[in-house]
Length: 178
Image (tube, rainbow, N blue to C red):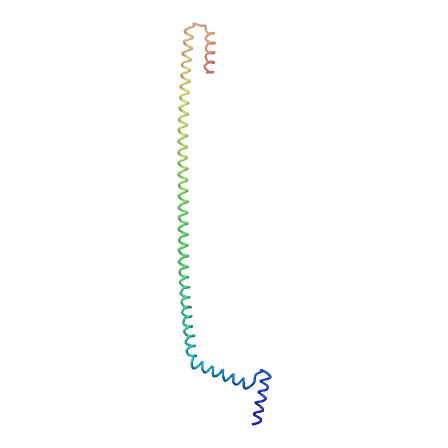
């Protein structure tokens, strides 16, 4: 066994030089780690795996509820978009109706204004016609008055034709000036 011991001693030296650890210390550390793994496996592994499994189930439930919430959010988003589009269409309809009503009101106001202007024009024409008739009547009356006055002057003065012409011209000129 001296060869076996020398081989162990040579391996021990190589390991010690390479790793800076004694072979016996390394064997003790490996054995302690194996014992620790066996103890954990016997006493704690079931609890650790049960805890991890429970945690996995909780995470799966949370993930599923998040998916459901996301799906509900998508449905609500689509519903809100439909409602928004509906409201937008209704507001456009209201706006169009208001524009149409305003246009009808504008046309009504214009028609009333034209009617009022036509009535005013008609009244003005009637007033002008009445004033014209009044002026004609007044002119005729003045002409009659002038003729009567001339006849009176002619009768009063028994004048000759030349004086009659002069009176006629003078009266005509004086009535045209007034």
